[in-house]
Length: 239
Image 1 (tube, rainbow, N blue to C red):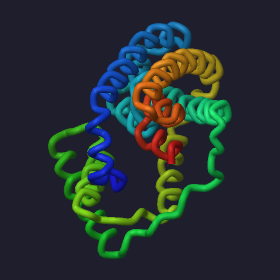
Image 2 (tube, rainbow, N blue to C red):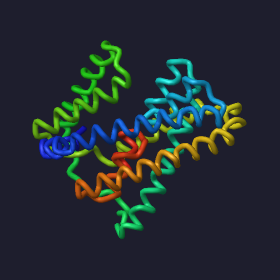
Image 3 (tube, one colour):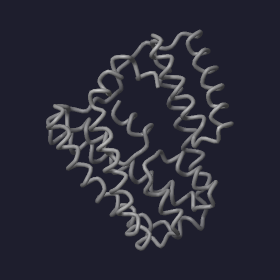
Image 4 (cartoon, helix red, strand yellow):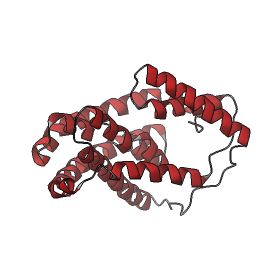
């Protein structure tokens, strides 16, 4: 959320029509490949829906578990997407003559006071979203809190070590649901998920090329914006 400064909001407003078109197109493509994934991987309808949904692995897995779907299969589907998107991003960058950085650029860390304000506002907005029964209340609450803080002029980023720890916690949570019985079913499901994901990525690549030509943005940026992955994962890959 701290990336959403006033300048970023101005840029997003100018791209709003492409954002809406791209989002609707990816949602439509995901729904079109859902029956194919269900048949190939032999999944139930609810699991298939969460497996093809546009969202992060953690969020979709938790919602799938709450709705009685197969959360490990949902986590596997979204994890494969992240891997395939990362590979495709490297290939696109190489073909475009772009050198990917070996480390993220450094930025000023948040002050203690700013971090306290951010944590407190994230907690209260998260509690409010929980009371309103919104999906992913804590993540969306933290995102909104970060946006509001960035709009009011707060500068700085969380230390990289904190981001690493947060990703480790998410990874542990996803891994705990993958039992022994899951791995006996995983190979067939992985093939089906990889095939359907590649279909999605091919369609997203074509749309990203059109957007990059019309907007004058790098193809890698347009591809990651269109890629069928979670906001957190795609944002970290882009960074």
